[in-house]
Amino acid sequence: MHSRRASALNQWGVATIEFAICAPVLFFLMLATAEVGRAIFQYNTLVKAVRDGARYAANNAAVGTTRVVNLTAARINETRNLVVTGNIAGTGTALLPGLTVNNVTVANAGNGFISVAASYTYTPMLGATLPMFPSGTPINLSRTLPATVLMRAL
Image (cartoon, rainbow, N blue to C red; front, side, top):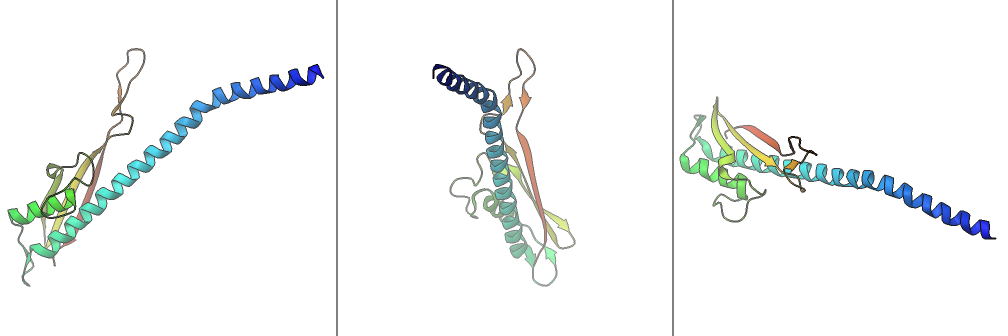
């Protein structure tokens, strides 16, 4: 009877050690999956915002039936505001943290096309750098997410 109880306690101790070995790997995989999902979500938000901005600029920049693209400064600012905040007035918070109108470019691409581009610096949840021990150079974890849409002016 005594040996059966000792065997059960030994098994419990082995399971604890196995968990201690596997837990960091499992936690890393969980956090990595969450981080990749967050990056994809932010990239999708950026692409949708740029697409909406290009659609707005394409609908409002052409003059009549001449197919001459007329991008005024006001129209460019409205498009940039739409990409950043989701409205042409530029009121409210940015769709992505840290995204500003300086990250958005609106240009006449020629031949009746309008180009809207934006670049966004993605920063992971745990910080922008991964320190290297004992005294190595830290690894930069931030990544630039670019999005460009080209549309024909209507």
